[in-house]
Image (tube, rainbow, N blue to C red; front, side):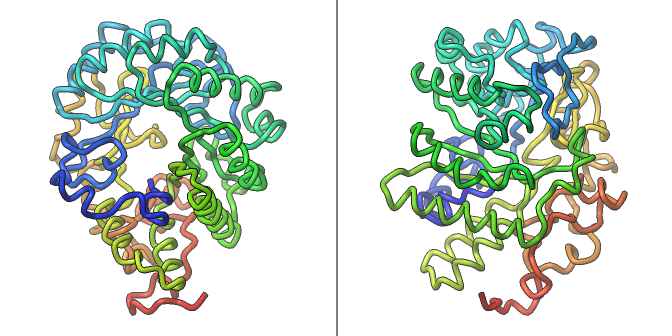
Length: 400
């Protein structure tokens, strides 16, 4: 997760995170990505069922009843364990999490345990009444998936009218006083609407947006050809940076982040050097604090059946199950295996990644994407869009 607004527009300085000791238990939510102890943010897929048919769905959800999901008592026990372990955030996801009948009670319990509760949803089920109840339950944030305007979003999400219903859900959240933001997945079909999304953010008064690079997992594993080319990705990231600056210069301090491609950090830093931006070095310091991809360390996932994964995309890599072993024990198991290897990945990376001068900033990027394309989790991430010149150990700044 790269905070474009934090870094490029200077809303966060290194001193902001250093004064908290960089400990996740002490850091406010907007600084958690800079923590040094990397207590994991946990994505809990509370159910697999979904009312939409998104073409990139990592859980391959359908609108059907699934069996074997954690029941209410098991969910409460999971929350208790995560809280005791010091997890700072539980992200309730799915499928569509709002289809789970006891979701409000789970959110309330999370808040009573002192853990921040956030929600990832398609937004189509949020009514004014439900938004008010979510706010009363103590939900801290709602991320609504919106992948373009109108028919672009409807096609991507597999349902006519999904866009209008998501917008209604966003407006209901804002009326209820809930902090709400957008989640936009970048692909060849959605990238043309990037500029329009920024217009929508300004028009609707939406305070936060996360732009997700495509990850080849679930139904998305068949969409490698739908990802942007290297040049198209660079153009998309430049557009995001430029429009973020325009919003901030206009007095609209929207929080803008890019997610799931840590090349964005070095790319932003190199751009700032070319622009002779005086904040370039503090930005590099923050990027090093961020540490790059943290699958299996700073983020983890608990699936609907209790299986633990290094992140929400790596569903074929099972680390254990909370029905038999608490998450806290699974996560701290130091026996040799994939989890330990991921935490020492620099010893295993190959090719460009192994010699890249940005390894301490990127941390090898997304291993699940490398595996999806090459079959080797230690191969180069195919979504890396930095040139050989930009990653060369020489340290020279390439010309624009």
